[in-house]
Length: 631
Image (cartoon, rainbow, N blue to C red; front, side):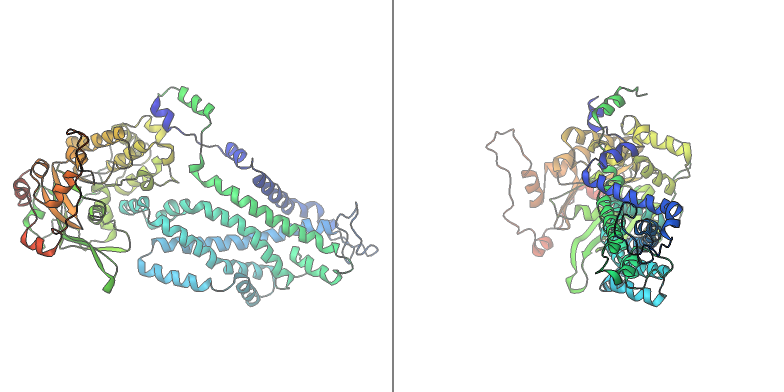
């Protein structure tokens, strides 16, 4: 019961959400104004067009009255009726311009997020150059070149708005594209098209929706300005801008003829601006909050593996020059002289310096070190998930006897996505907040198995049950924010088991969790290792935690391995000064509070001279393993 009370959130219905969003005065006013003009655009031409076009030469330029609310124009036509009828053409042209601008801008902006670095930089420069021109000047130029008409003005305004839309979307998608859940989707082999429209666009939808609605108001005014200047709608058609231009010749004698269309432009613009801020909340699933009554009703309700294997590595083991230990039959993952660099040319800096690592079947290996020692960069490089500004170089990189160097990105995704899953320290950043848990799990099944429909759902439910998540069928329909931190991490572990994992890379998987949930997550990882023989590489700065999980430990400092060996030997007889300092920094209250933690004040061991004279301590059992001995 406690688990459910602390983790269950409601799924919003449109009616309930609309009622909540538009309870604010700004949202209500914006909705009323926009709804009024939309209804006018739809129905006014049907009922009022005859009156709007009826000439009454006996009553030209009559002032406002009960019969003519905004007076009449120079030909005796009712200005109020003409304002309402003109809403259709004004809105149609404005909406067309906004949609064209939005589609092109979003496509260009999202495309920049999935392209390679070189193409992305070229696109950035083109967008920056295009935004140097004021949009109204660009719209005037384009509309004039395309011909004086409403359609030309619409196209000119649309093309003029593309650069600013694309720049906003580029800035938004640049952040989302670097998120862990997008990197995981790339690794799983999600196609670029699906990556764009399912993983990136939904997570920038809120500001894009706001931009769209607010842009409607700004574009409406710009469209009216183009018609006012004689570039837009031409007689006998008319829109609000054209009506103001027509009335300007009598502005001093009969100013009321301009008031009607001016009020229409201002009120519609304000309505779209107010509505845009509130409408954005509709697309953010993280805004869902369950009412107490609904939560209690839900809690009161009764809580009432098959398929094709994942993509196999069917190639023969590579015959290139590798050390024998990397090609040994029981080696799952091996890397030799791994280096990670940041920057280019003279600014290039080496962050990870010559890592050698061998992981055997069923082995549990821990990598420890302080923050910045290169632990996370090492396993990110192993999974080919380094950030775009970093690059890795390696002398040998094998997985199940296959050389991973030189393989295409598609081939790497098929291999790594199914057999080398990665679990990150913050599951909230690893899961797509805009998709349900079931949709994200299904993406992995789609990429690496032939399971579909009911079989896929059964497999997902089984995976969630295996990691101890209650009500797995309902959890599939929930978004990540509707789960607790521990449940989100369990979902990540469940997703890791959907393929055919041979080794799991875990990057501080318990950092964001409390102690009791940490123990549960560690228990799940050990169970996977014991039951299925899945190897585990776990990164942490907590040496005590690693000692509870792993059989072998690698100690890193400054991007280098400084000591390696069986856990009991490294802890019982540490050889390197940094390892001794790490152990001394673990709190120990057995001797009372007078015991002081160790601090590092002597870094003489972190020099090339010291390293040349003192090879990396590799304890006896560890050396035998690396030499190819049986586990």
